[in-house]
Image 1 (tube, rainbow, N blue to C red):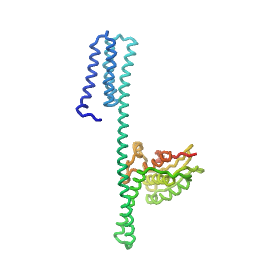
Image 2: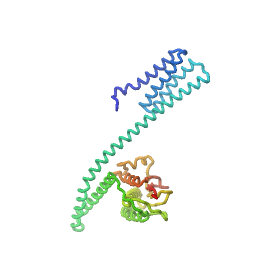
Image 3: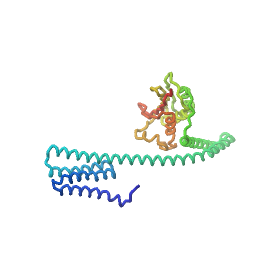
Image 4: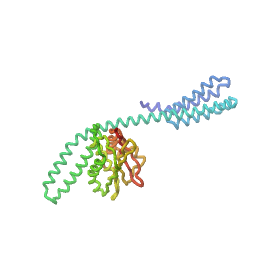
Length: 339
């Protein structure tokens, strides 16, 4: 719960007052009040803990250092500087610093977890809304695309309106693809596993994606390790994931570029890798590309890679991203071998 602003403004004065009062009492009491001094030095932890809790580890460290600076002269003036007293004082100041940092770090981590929980809750709400809208859009888009195609077939060749209808059909197909991505992501995955030959799956996938690669003047290649074991997987879902990866790679590649689909066995796993020679994925973006609706493209929903990740996790696998040396990115779909 967020406190009113008038209370938050009192935090700094409270911390300063606590440090000042505790320090004044330390110097006010005589050296014969040993028990009282022990209590007072422990009271120093109160402003340190409050500072770390309210403002984080660096603020907690700052107050701990200030307290240590005030505590050191007291030790030098009141106590005899024997090895024992010096060791005790040094230990106490190290504890001040450790507590300030630890409390601040724990508080910062708790706030980070709270932020992630709020983001997840917001994304879930957005996902439900998008799924509802996408479901309602599906039928009208199919009707627009179908009727436009029928009208185009009845036009005379070379008619000026033919190009306009082609644009309508093309944009409608693009919207249908976006709606399909939204629905694919929002629906729970029901896998229909079967013994799957990865060689045949790769060939069918490259055949499906060949048209887009030709439009972008990108060469599609494959490099599958011989003797790959079959996997227990849903062929439709796995092909969907590979198509998403290849389409992304094609769109990221320059003209005359190359996109390769490779596969090999890695221990008790099989790796399906899609590599391109485009601009690559900056390290900062790798933390976000699997978040729904995050995209760096002018067009798109930002759901392609989250759908791939969802398919991978449903199969008990994972999606990895790395660099394709000397240039580009590589996405690895790692699937476990079920014995």
